[in-house]
Image (cartoon, rainbow, N blue to C red; front, side, top):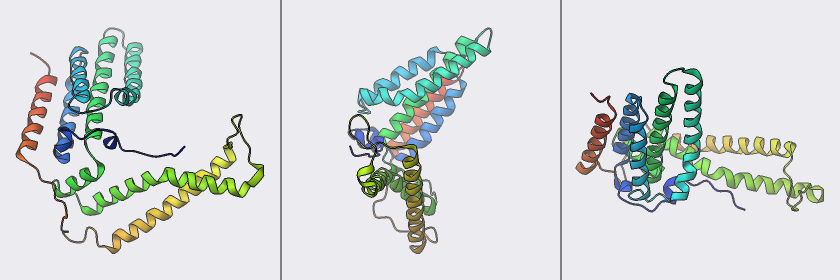
Length: 248
């Protein structure tokens, strides 16, 4: 079995949200997340969560099964918030706990929509071109991301080399597969760490030799901020603020 790391954007068919400018999309996500801090009752987060789930399954093209799996950490964290407030508050613990759990689920679905509709390369390029984030930072993040993608393959290669050295004394489980002992796992983790550090050092040297961050650079594939991107971002932000502010 081959181990791979895939970004959520590779699992979804490109759609309308994919064409939304990544930098504007990130700012909009931040506004939505901050707006959720003003909600202290459970009904509005629940309705907003239902709406975002519908958007994810339709416009966002997110597979239902993958969306359910992606909910697991947010459900666990939200349940923890709910339980703590129920046990710690005597009067309104249930309502506040449910509101905090609802906030978590809303921000979780919004984050899932952002991840599934935004490729990492496009996001870093947009932050560099549109928000003027230094190239030394954006390209370093991209290099680190590419390094992360290669770690599973590196793990398998090193593990195969270890098994070859052990020869016929390899311990096997009931299914006949090589057993990864605690000692072997420690060696494997240490070796992968050393390989990652050496590769990151080579990447840093390569970026430095190309003069990243020293002067403005030309762009091969520019990412533009269209009027429709700004209008959509302002509309979603205004709706989030108006919806989340306490009702009079």
